[in-house]
Structure formats: C-alpha cells, structure tokens
Length: 233
Image (cartoon, rainbow, N blue to C red):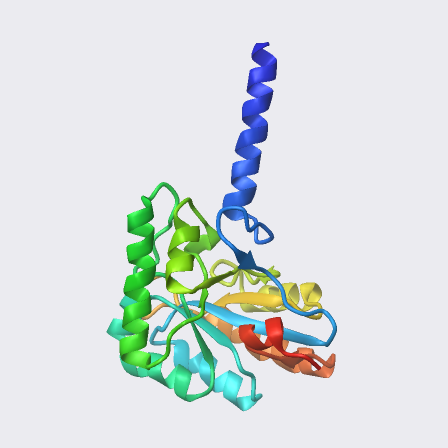
C-alpha cells in the first residue's frame, strides 16, 4: 500500500511539473506554443527586454526586414522607455513578460495579477499599445495565472524552440535554432537578462547574424505571434 501511495504521489508530481513547465500544456493557464503549419513561416520572439543591447537586435531585424515579438518587463520599460517605444515604432509586436521578471511559482493569485497588471499599465503608458500576449518568466506557470490572463485579456505564449542563448555561444545557439525550426515554429530568444542593466547578449546577436540568412535561404518567412496564429495564406 505504501508503494502504491508513493507511486500515486509520483504521478501527481509529474503531472504538476508538466502543467507548470511544458510549453505544450494549457492546464494551469491557456497558452499556445506554435502557429499554423500550412505555410513556411516562423515567429521570432525575445524575452526580458528592453535592454541597452536591444538596439543591436533591432538593427539585425531591420537589415533583413524581419518582424518580431518582444515580451517586455515593466521595470525595464520604465528604465529604458525610448528603446521600448522604438520597438513599437519599428512595427514589432509588444507582449507582457511581468513587471519584475519574477518566477511565478508559489506566489499568490493576487501577486501574480499584480505582476501582470503593473507591466500592462507601464507598457500602455510608455509605448501606447496594449499587449495581447503574455509569456511567463522562465516559462513557469502557476495557479492564479489563468484568472489574471482572463482579467487582462492576455493569451499565454510559450515556444516551439528555445535558443538557450543565455548559456550557449552564438554558433551553437544558431545551430540549435536551424536544426529545430519547422513551419509554424515560435522561437524564444532573449534581448535582456531579467531586469539586469546592460546585459551581455552577444550570443543572441551572433546567433541571429548566422541563422537569419540561412532561414531565408531555406525559404522561411517571418511573422509576429499574431500573424503566425491567425494569418491565412
């Protein structure tokens, strides 16, 4: 009987871990992790910005005329409002990545809501846009997030491919992105490191320099999250 109890606990823990961390799960809060597969398109997304290094990412995107979706932290928007505004002005989509980049696990529903609503208000005030999409820091969802997203009209966005650009060199990141990309993929990269000022995102920049021309050569087009979820051919 004891073995059965421990076995049941193990199953429950595995189910909880899947709901909290798996990009494919919508159990704790509604989310998407990929877009339409019927055309050769991918969506580049960037977390943790804006940062002092975000313009380096934007320059590469503009060079290749690539639209992207940036999930911004409210605290970073307040610190660097002009960079945040430049993203929207350049035609990129803006999403919500909480105010302080706090991990949401074990937080109360009220605390989770405050993280989302504070970021939403700062982005609206500084950028003049109302985010429709949300990405949880570290990809961790928790109880109370479903209600917060519903109250704010936010859809959760996870990913099909995560670049691991905060810990791998650019060449390796690019190889991972190219090997794992497929039509409809939502790709997660980072133009910041939490709310740390002046982060080193050289690996992300190098990966983009390497990967974007090869994606183009392979016939991929680039879309925002809205476009890859909703646009028809």
